[in-house]
Image (tube, rainbow, N blue to C red; front, top):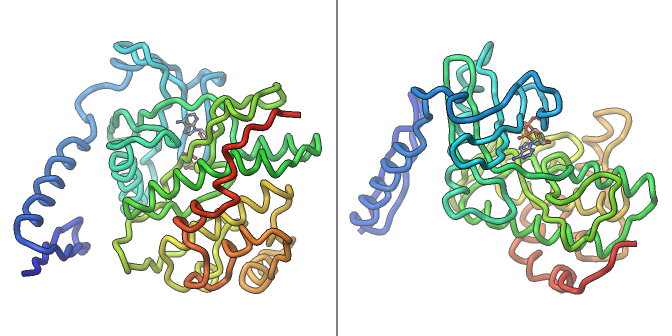
Length: 325
Ligand SMILES: Nc1ncnc2c1ncn2[C@@H]1O[C@H](COP(=O)(O)OP(=O)(O)OP(=O)(O)O)[C@@H](O)[C@H]1O
Ligand SMILES: [Mg+2]
């Protein structure tokens, strides 16, 4: 017997889960009820009662954007130093606020089993102006900074790229296995724990962490999304064409990321936006190594899948240790 469980997500948005039996449906319902209770933001408590921080202190600001700020803070109880992403709700449309809540839901889901290549969500606070996401602090600069340093010093190295790329793939695979499509894989959204710009490091001590689920979505097997989101340089052809997409869109962005990690160049970016779109849809990149060429395959059905990427001999060879030059 098959059982259809319809869950109302918001007014006008429902989700149907097809489950093999009634018992499984009840289990899922219980699980969802429990996680909804646990993820209810901490509306009553004041964030400053628990965390010590000063939003005005520029040294404590880890990141800043259109959303608000990410600030370093200290838990007064556990003494743990954390990162608090504060998202302003002012002047936001209802769908934008819903997107913020979705980011929180995904982070809760991913934090449950906690993968080492991600920052765990620890707590959420909300008042009428701000949503505050308390996360594990990642101490290290972004992959963007790493690439900048490689460009300045001309230190692009296939072994380093591989060492960093493998855990990024593993982290994304963990995300995909839970049905989540990240949709914003790019240099800025990979933080390298243990990496300080322009300070000598051992590549073995750097641990990449995937962040920012602000554009993510959840797709069940066979489901596709029609909403076009992402960052221009990393967009997949299906998104540029306005076609529906699934997890394979992340694989394309990952291919672009690897190309940059190996060469220091953005494969499709041109001066004109229209030309960039054209390149994403049509430009074939010729590169001698076959391992990533299939990641930037235009047709998502022909594109290599993430589990195949992880089994690829090039990725498997990442365990050999290399000293930094
Ligand atoms: N857990 C963390 N630990 C340390 N720094 C963090 C953490 N989370 C985010 N940051 C810093 O804050 C920046 C912005 O965070 P995030 O990527 O989540 O926001 P965003 O929505 O992408 O904002 P924007 O699109 O405007 O960059 C990151 O690039 C990073 O520098
Ligand atoms: Mg970001």
